[in-house]
Length: 427
Image (tube, rainbow, N blue to C red; front, side, top):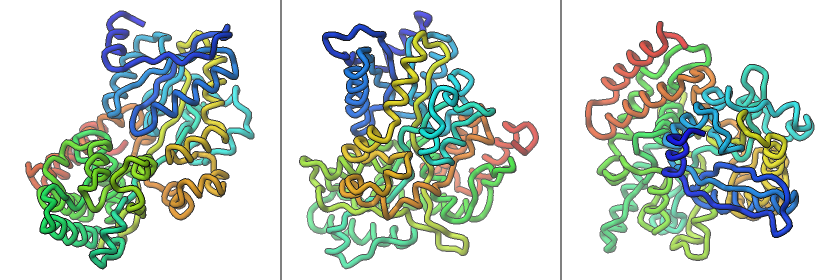
């Protein structure tokens, strides 16, 4: 790795050595891991177990929590073709962007093992016939709610966004009258980054407004249902959601909700284990449900497909050991441990019927269809230009949320920008 890129890595990430024990005589493998919730801890524990078992050592690199910042860092490191990181934790939308830098895992991992995982994710990770990453955990956006407050105010879990808006307003007003002037109705991820793309895609798809770019490559984002969905979200800012939500990422929203200062939250499943931890002010007071649907005909419950994969760098000097680490971390036993301890969704279907997993995370069973049928971002169709598509989308939505133009004007401008990026109006 060049000195410049190595400096970027050190500036952006803290590096922690995980030893395989006093008798370790093998090679050192480095793996990049996120640090949202319990991610880094669970990654370190899994890597440590593999190191103890194999006699190797592992260096765990904590990368930026923002997926946007992490992608930029990865692109700089990989473009230098350095071998400082052997195993990369990559977002579900990155195989098409980064795949040329990764080893084809299919010849190295038993087909029976690959077949245990959700086929849709395996297909997502397969680029030009090569399996560029193994699924590690999957995600979909879900709704967290204060079950105690719904009961206190005589409210049901909202089925539609209008019902959520009204319930959030009712609870917020009641809690503020009771003396908590810091209480809000609904918190979510409104910062201008990939997390806003996920939230806004959920709003639009739940209204029947499509998926930004359709599977056939046509640009579909500029339509009345999409306009209505984004305008509704804009109406939350400063009413049931704080203006600061425009700078919230996952942890920002979780901090408000878990402190007891919000009635509802949109987040990923990882937040469940933290909300139920012994030091959580809302322990035992939280429920989980599918996100609300739009009001009009065609409205549906939906959640954006998320999740993370493990890929091996083409530039690794120890590919065999790196592949073995990926095999271990994505295994049934390790995914089960992560599900129980951190509520990270397995990518192995059989784990959704495992009694110990369902005891630890009951909603994995009831919301299984949400995770299996989550709406995908248009990363496959946009390929290595997806980041430009997503950036244009989240900026258009963020402008609307912050009061700089309405959804109709901003989505119209977005359509023009996507036509320009596609060089002709179809991807």
